[in-house]
Amino acid sequence: MGEAAVDGTMKVCVLTLFPELFGPFWDHGIIRRAIQGDKLNPLTINIRDHAEGRHRVTDDRPYGGGCGMVMKPEPLSAALSAAKQRLPMAKTLLLSPQGKRFDQQMAQSLAAADELILVCGRYEGVDERFIDGHVDAEISIGDFVLTGGELGAMVVIDAVARLIPGVLGNEDSAENDTFSDGLVEHAHYTRPPVYDNQRVPDVLLSGNHQEIDRWRREAALIRTMLKRPDLLDQREFSPQEREILKKWRRDIDSLLG
Ligand code: 4FV
Image (cartoon, rainbow, N blue to C red):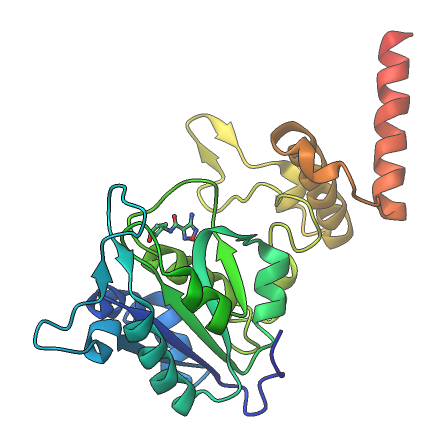
């Protein structure tokens, strides 16, 4: 999805009725650092600025009756044209419960894009003709209904921005991400070595990085089996993981005598 970032900067434009919601998001943490480091170039466009008439109406009652309001197609497509003037190569993504479920894999593919346009709906949703005519893909952050797409857009931008080369401190931290290899992450510990009468696992204090890697791989595997067994359904185990699983089977067999 989208051409690789030629100059290493991802341009992202958000179409929303509440651009002010994004101010704090742009101004904090890794996102702020990505913007200051020219890795992320954000833009918000207020859909209402592209609505006609004195009242700049952006929504109306649904044809066929029923409760709630629907976002009108004209202000949306006018706002989108303004965005495309700045981001001509961008794919247009609508945040909606009907969308393809967002996950780390999708984040990795979006992170390769040079430009992205994210459309945030409000009310009951947007007029279907805008989707048919202008939306390249719909993305859902989960099977629940939000009051607006803005939080979904922030989730997507946050997960994608940290995968842009050079955004995270040392490169490899994204490599060991949860889900980057289809497993949940191993447990993390920091000082103090004893907390609440609980000691940090000795291997982590050993300095033996081969043993530490092996412990972390084993921990990731067992935590995935315990916390997210669904992640293992279609998953191919690496030779190292197969060795670990066989060792467990031997241990269990010896326990069972
Ligand atoms: C949503 C989701 C979501 C639907 C109607 C906004 C709301 C309202 N977006 N993943 N789940 N959107 O619930 O992305 O317009």
